[in-house]
Structures are given as C-alpha cells and as structure tokens.
Amino acid sequence: MVRELTILTVLGTAFISSGTPAAATVPLEGARAVARPDKRSGAETQALDHLLERSGLRVQLASLSAGVRVQFLRGRGRLSGQDRLTIDQIVSERFAAEALYARISREFAPHLDAAKMAKALAWYDSPLGKRITGLELAALVFDGGPRAVADLENDRPSPRRLALIERLDAGGGASETTVDVTMAIVRSLTRAFQPALPAVRRLNPGQLEEELVRARNRTREQIRAACLVSMLLAYRTLSDRELEQYVQFVESEAGLWYMSVMNSTLLIAVDVAADAVAAELVTAVPQLVGDLR
Image (cartoon, rainbow, N blue to C red; front, side, top):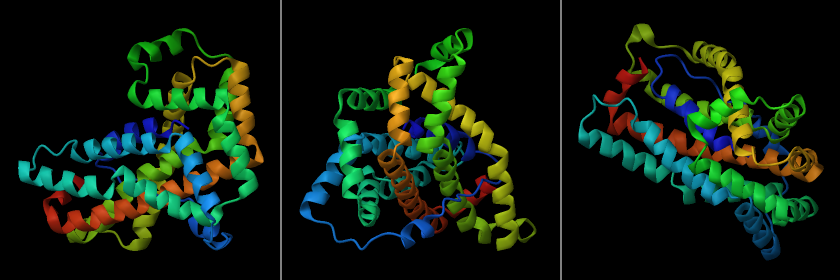
C-alpha cells in the first residue's frame, strides 16, 4: 500500500506543529497474544523473505527512512550545525531501513500462516501483483506533483473508482496505519521531552493521553483524505477491473492477514525506533524542547 507517501506528508506538518500530536492506538498486545511460538522452518523463513521482498518492503522502508531523517531536521534552523548533525546521526541509526526490516521480519515470524502466506506470495508474484508493486514503488519517487492533483480535480474519479479506493484503504489499513505510525513518532518525542518543559506546561499521564486522543481524532479525516488522493494518483494507470482485482486480494483471507500483520509489525518497528530516538535526543540535544512548547 502507498502509505509511506502520506506518512511523510503528515510528518512534515506534525514535526513542526505547536499542537499536541495524536496517539497510536493499534492493539498490538492483542495481536501478540494469539501469536504462535517463533519456530519457523528454513522454508518458512525463505518464503517470508520472498514475500516481503516481492511486496516492495525494502524499498518502501528505505524511502520512509530517508523521509523521516529529512522531517526530523525541518524547522530546526535555530539549532547549530553540530546539533543538526547529531540529530541526523541518531535518527539515521535508529530508523535505518535494515534495522526496521529486521524488526518487522522478527515480529512477523510468530504470526506466520503457511497457507495464507502462499496465497499472498502467489498474488505478488502474479503479473498484476508485480505491476501494482511497481506502481507503488514508483509513487514513492514521483507522486505526480501539482499537475496530477489538478488533473484529479478536473477529471474526478467515478463513484465506482472512488468506492474501490475507499475499500482498498479500509482493507489495507493505509490511512489508519498512516495515523498510527506518524503519531507514534511525535508521541515518543512529546513524552520524552515532557520533563524538560516548564512546570506550568507539563501534563500528567492522564492529561497527556486525553490531549493525544483528541488531536488524533481532529487529524484523522484530514489524513484519510490525503491518503485517498495519494492512492488515486499511484493507481491512476490501472483500469477499474484491475483495481477491483487488487481490492479482492486485499479483502481476501490471505490479503487481510498480510496487511494486518504488516501494519502491526511496521508500527512496532517504528515505535521501537522512535522511543530510542526520543530517549537519545533528550540527552544529546536537550534544546529541542523549544520546538515542543
């Protein structure tokens, strides 16, 4: 799914916003509770690596990693060159694409289902599956720009096509995961720097959670709209029938399994990286607190 485009767009606003960020609410503990022990065979390991590779995960994570590095430095003009270098070094290490990939693969392992994995892999190995993955990866580099968005305004998608995109978003969890991943990063920073804020601006844990939830609800529809536009642009060369076939896969048992586990494990990987970054920045660049007031 083309969630990375929207994640980076939202990060650009969230990181320099003076408002309180929203909260990540994916029930990860519940997903872990039903996981089977991590005892996968060599064949399963190979199949999982093949599936993650075919779905374009490595390239998507490389794009996400690069984008997060850029967004961490946006609006930091008041910082010295050394501070900016320190931030970039910390973020680069913790959000390295290979580190995220390793965490996702590790978290994915307990949720393996050989039958569903085989069906998902068959989809991504199909001609249409390969073409769609190619479109998603191309969209990470080139989203069409203002002219493409203007074309959407002038030639609005049909009700059928818009409905397919909305089903694709719902089945694949693109906009919900975009909210969760984006706000998980900002939430980690907010929590880590709370103790450094002036006493009158500090929130107790309950107050902070209430503010995070309210902010998440305020931005949810805006993020969903941005995600739908990104998807319309990314898949604009697909016919309605081809798009419908993609929706059918995403809504299938195998598709829902893959998208659900992928979204949850991506959020786990980002949570771990974001918490580590926030903890290190509090010590290494304490003056960042000025951006969170």
